[in-house]
Image (cartoon, rainbow, N blue to C red; front, side, top):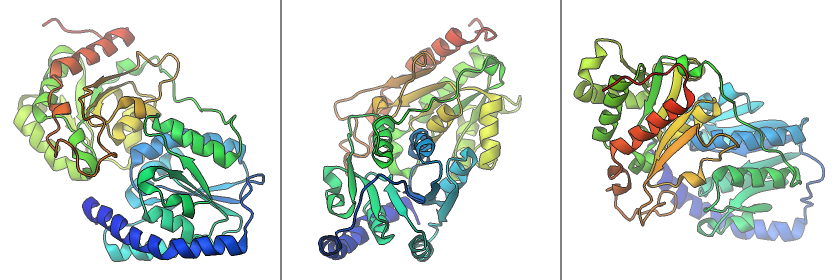
Length: 394
């Protein structure tokens, strides 16, 4: 199913199921009086995250810290099949249940099958990592897990009555901090450590590619830069540095990237200076390519940014409809390693906050960021870090 259809299904079917299940849940809660204490860790902990590989990658640090507190608990992830393939190489979960969303029938049958499987798991807890979804809350409820954790905020007020443990979601706080807060509640401690990301590797600037990514999910296409801006950035990299460019994206981005290259960078392809990596590699090979071949990445706010950070790559990110303070958690000493441009217009941030965006898709917050401003960040990053890097004289 396409993303707009998924969102409509989540909205309308979700509300119908909630209207039916909420009174029943409240009644059973009064009659059964189940004990929802957190002193004894569960045997199984099921995480639900159907959309957003990037946000799931952000959550992995908190999940890995939680694993240290629950060494005997089996961690399971329920997610979209494509996200399952992307997260599996990180080894965060013991088991992954992929939901295939190619059709409504397949999605429903997959979901029912996993609900039935969850009934066979003794001492099961469920952590719903989705922030706005209604159906994931219903799904967590139908597992009949003794403890069900979920984020609570005004747009999804009903969760207060369907989850056993509600964690306030602070929209003005970094997403990583919200995930850490949930992990602390699950672990029943405020002392859960924050695990450090990969650190600097001395030879990373000797690698041949700078990665460029201007792709994102259809959930918020307003995050994309204009093609002309990306083209100007690419021309500067190819004319003023010793690096080649590799474009990132999913398989369904490949044709659009090829059209972009043919229109804006035709002279560089015959010399092997530009490569389209969208959909070429499986995820394990894709991550190896990023780790072994890339010096840094220039990207908008989307999955490749958070994957690159997880893999220890320096980043330059560009923001408009979303606020970097909500997604980039800097560790000590990383301020010169992860640079960003943020055009904070009056209506930003808007993505994930408004169903109808104030600009109606005319993302002036991205269109008004000049290429020169992004190029300045790239130049600063390279000059600051690289002893082997050399800028060519114009």
